[in-house]
Image (cartoon, rainbow, N blue to C red; front, side, top):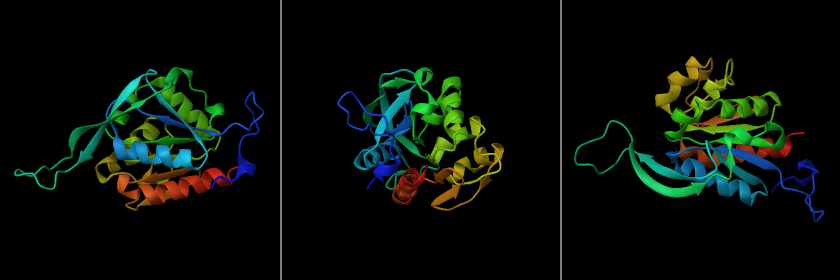
Length: 206
């Protein structure tokens, strides 16, 4: 349950207090479970989730896993099509001051969208304000590119440990790691503790 005393006091035209907004940046090949579980969990808790992308359009999600029943074993994750999700905001139009927090999902999308200067700008704005940031799996590539984890303890999927270290972070193999305003998780298997922690951080800010 969201602590209403910590919600934004801004009201809409009806006088009803506006729900605090959480920015969720993504692109094509965002991982489905990394994205949809937190999306609906945040809605359930009373937040407005603003999905943003390089452009405001429909995006492809994917399923990432090492197939357990392949006749020829895979050493890496296989990518399969998932559901679609619509971004209603382009990165260039995102302003950090409008958001109560940031959730960065994984998949292959971060590898590509981390080059977007406006995504890095708004990520830095939210981070500089000390607002809660949650990140799972390959999402660490965005925090690294934005230089937000230098000197921090973080976790991520094992194959991205080097990305975390190159960004100045200390990699820890744990289901979730909290350091300041940032909580990180390894993969969607850690969704429950990640969201429990992130929601607690959102409720306790301010």
